[in-house]
View 1 (cartoon, rainbow, N blue to C red):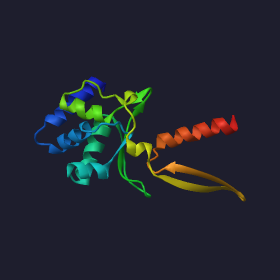
View 2 (view 1 turned 180 degrees about the horizontal axis):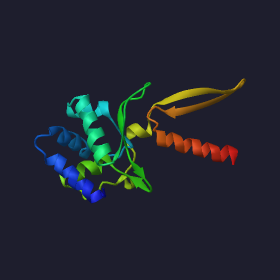
View 3 (view 1 turned 120 degrees about the vertical axis):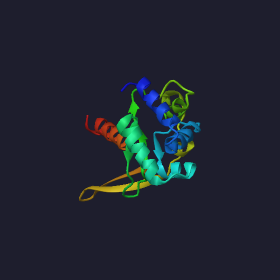
View 4 (view 1 turned 60 degrees about the horizontal axis):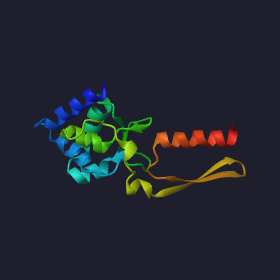
Length: 165
């Protein structure tokens, strides 16, 4: 499905009067001013007053499976449930542009390249990790609490190049 088809489907979902869930979530996305690499489910609950189940179903069934805009990640081991927006070089899908496209106010779904990260992402809380790598050797690092798998994979690839190339 190309982006024009995805926009048509978003507008159809948005205008479907029997599904107020889509309209509330997409309006919430459109109201943002900063791009984010992920959308936390608990924040969407607070902003829309929808149930976590309705939000999860929309993110998973519509945005992930039907439109392939990202991946729904269920919270586990201290991580919160979230929707990670698909990132394609040189930029990725923008929750703001997705919301605006659904409202008919934008003709593109991508837009992260010219938007700044939100203040929450710039100043995210850190978790310190101490990993034993040998009998008397430890690796110590600080990682953001909202680190995505893709970001971690980028970090690992970088460390491999720096230390083992």
